[in-house]
Length: 117
Image (cartoon, rainbow, N blue to C red; front, side):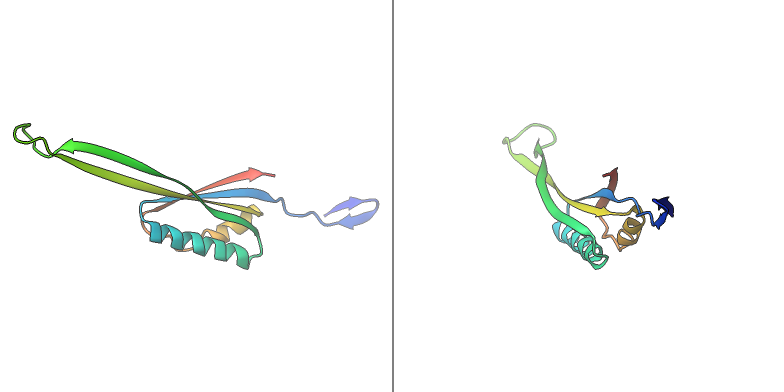
């Protein structure tokens, strides 16, 4: 507690801008984790922006089917799609631990970035 003009003033908790970045190859599990995070944040009455769908990264590899190089020239095409979601929160840092303590699906990577506002 601090004093201003002789009166006691309670200090507010420092509010942070928090960016949660989720990446996965599996869209349904990614959407499920996003929905749980947003639901948990809204239950604690925080400001939530998102989930914002970022562009999908597509990694492509084209290779010859035959190992020796003889025969007809046939090709295999493989791709790996990486989906990304971004959720922005405005809240104290302690509240984020409670929100992010949910069950996270296998194959979903979570990155939390905290910035002072």
